[in-house]
Image 1 (cartoon, helix red, strand yellow):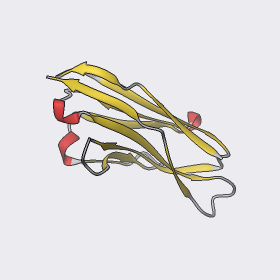
Image 2: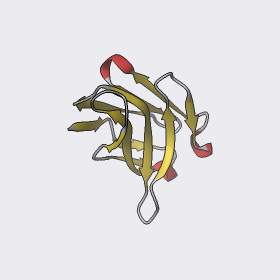
Image 3: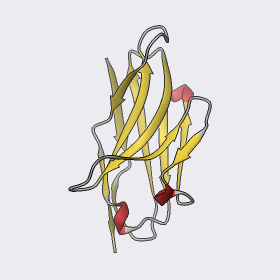
Length: 121
């Protein structure tokens, strides 16, 4: 079994910064892509940013230039640095990882439990 544990959410004023972390543990042979998604009340979950095992990144248009995703492959951890936060960034943020538990022949999607980010105006 694989667990993803997120940390770093909280309450921040508009214009402030937060750094989210997500550590994967358990039966892990390798991790392919990792990413952050968010879900605001009454809305669907949406991709915020993703990063491949080689370090290639992609971002949703509404966070480009403000958020930075990174990962530490030795620690099986992905980070999301969020700068210039806006009230519309308020959501539950979820970590996702594509994990191969045994030999790299197949990958399974795992999700963290979510961490609340609230940006006050």
